[in-house]
Image 1 (cartoon, helix red, strand yellow):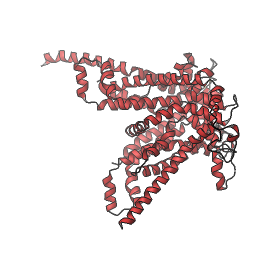
Image 2 (cartoon, rainbow over the protein chains, first blue to last red):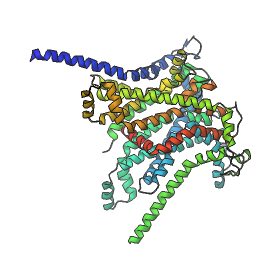
Image 3 (spheres, rainbow over the protein chains, first blue to last red):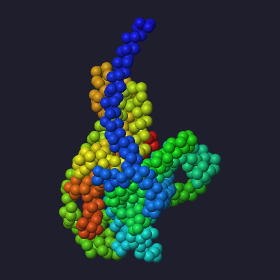
Image 4 (cartoon, one colour):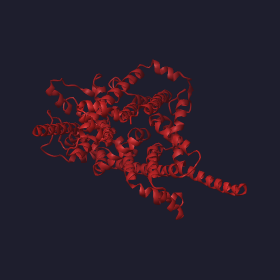
Length: 303
Length: 280
């Protein structure tokens, strides 16, 4: 036995070694790119966040944790965080409520459902720049489409994008508009997975449709609801394009949001150190949300 | 009794259509408004209440828009960078996916987790370091600068791996008996059998890269290196003074290829997204 085992063992290890090298050759490109452009930047961001640096000069001035301390005394930063959280909250809640309702309607056997779905989903694949462009024109105070919808309601003429009270709501409206389709399609997929027998049994038992929805359907699709809440929230934290093009964060930072402020600091004002501190805080915040998501989703799923 | 139930069923059906038509209008009207503005003359643009269909259709707006900035060049830049990004992205993802699905290695699961961890890191955090790296490489204002930082694509690798795992072992064994190595098994067995998911992935990546704004904005500062979305955003700023009709026409330049692709393959794309997101 022992005599026979030695060559076999050697043969296996030779094969295992060859497999290992193939494995590294195949995954190598992906891992090298991830290391250079995703993992290393985290450490480099932290390093840069300890300095004052204008991105061009060879000299960096060491500041320690001053950039992080500055965030707490920066009024614009506080406003930007508030705007971002308001935007995330309203976008996610309104978008999901509407898309869940539309998904329940689309889940009924009706003609033309593919047509409805295709149109409602289409903003998902539309360039944000073009979306922002047409919505900026819709919000135009004198000739814009929004005015002609609001005037019959007796509402005054509003210059949405130039008003400190209306610029953020305008951005939120566009984010909701462009995000409904994606959430709706995922809700629809979840609804299709609910077995029909459950509904039939409930209806035989005399439950009202409203009751059936809240007591049966809603708990059964809760993993999707949870997934969309978390990913939707994170996506709004990362949003840049719409705010950049519609308002450039203005007026007076009333629609400035996190990544846009980061961009301004880094690439308009060349405050690379401060911007790196902003980036790192965003990273930690998203990391914490993701870890909570992983923890909760294990105890959340209903089957 | 039966009659009443039918009326109620009909009423509920009509209500469903009513709700969905409203939603379709709300989502669809901005696109119609874009198109309608793009073919108006300057007086009709400045009319309130707005006209939906102009008396004279002005296709020359598209010519004017095309000439306000080098849109031909933007098109070339967008096509080159999106195509290169998609091809490199799918090839690297396919190799990684195959390794994770088929090649035995002790620490495979550990590396798989490392790869998935990368998916949690938002690209926005890496903007400054990536810019610094590219500046050192002298890659600012180059195609490789736009493309390379976003080639690695964990989502694609994950999606393809899941698909490769569903292919029966017999087929892989047969390939091995025929003397095919891993590379040829990947290209002659695994990928051809994954055609449905591969098609969705290609299209999805292409659209994502075609629409990208933030990174191309940062990494280009010469007009002749801008991609379509960056170029479109630029013509709105003060350097040019053009009317909304030209801005809408230029927006259509950016949207057209994606909208055509979307309506040709919308069923596959929508269902692919639903399946991918639910599983992933």
